[in-house]
Length: 489
Image (tube, rainbow, N blue to C red; front, side, top):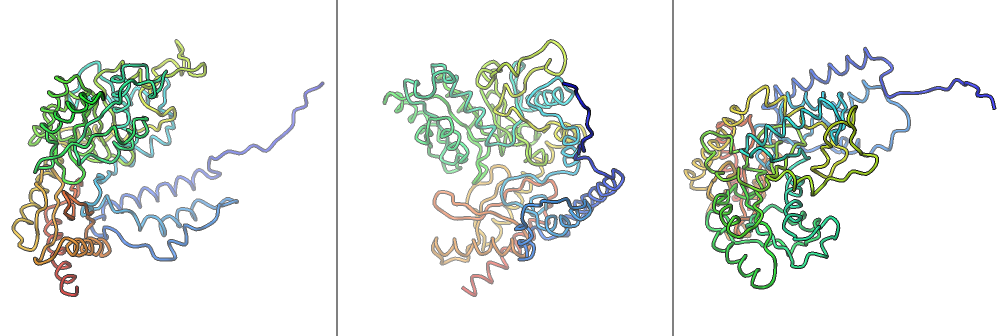
């Protein structure tokens, strides 16, 4: 049979006109700069008109559209309606405010294109460099390990998985959780984040394995109650395995007594995990680092780097003190992932330390931010946010119509508008309406929660753009709106 060469039409996703694509790319950059430069002058949030909502019902595109048309649609229908978390008066969910340099890092990482599951590349070395920097920031020793993940929930899952495998007494990866001879128990405060319940469910241990320990008047885990729970479980034939200390609870920002929990874990032979997704980075804040003393001794630590490092989403990190145990929890090497002495496969597989064989190049935006500003500036910004939270606390305490609902530990302030004479149900309705009107007017974004059975508003100040004048405005407007709602009610 004679091979006959034929001509076929072969396509690519590269632009037909690179000059036009470059021009539109420059328009996008200019737009982003103007948008960030003027962020304070826009509403925090605004409701989308019906026509904009309908735009997102458009069917699957079957044929091409020009890039300039796509960009026009985005300017009209997407960019004016963000969640608002980059705005200086967004204090709703605890997020971070992003950064222009971080956004450039995201673009460059995408154009560089490496898969950070592994491989002999500069991107892989940068990933290891950045996790090394984070270990240094947190005071973790040589021989520890770290892995970049999408956020705090996954970072906690990584740490709790290593804890399960280390404390089970069997080879869990080979035999499964059904072979564990005694039910493992994990302990956390009753303020623990919901991601830990999800983690224990995913690990096959179930929600019942998570013991919620009562908290004290400052919403910190009660160490005496913790010790009692551990003793009772042992007496019942259960197996205490891990204590989860929270460095910054979601409701109030309370930081558990990390050093006391560490000492108890060492005495009891338990894994010491710290959920530091809110407060771990206080470790780099010169005026407040004492609040997380002992965090450097954790067996595992979860961090959210898109919060107080203001990296664009997503960026989290899990640190583990024992690198060998960390790798043993996740590494697997089939024939198609064998290492080689030379070439692209001649490097450590970074997915040996997490669940993702395919991983984005998260390290670049972090590397650029830390290089541009230096860790000392991030520490000062954390101190600044904590100072702003205490300033807001002072405004609340000075205003008779406002009530502080929990002590302010770091940068989360729980409070409510209270004109007096209302029951809990009426106060909930009143403050919920205040919160929603603040959002709908584009003035400020707060969330709400319930602490020890009482509803309140919650301001989480994790924003490098916030100024004290913004907090003055918050109290003035909350008081005004509260008065209007209460009068009409």
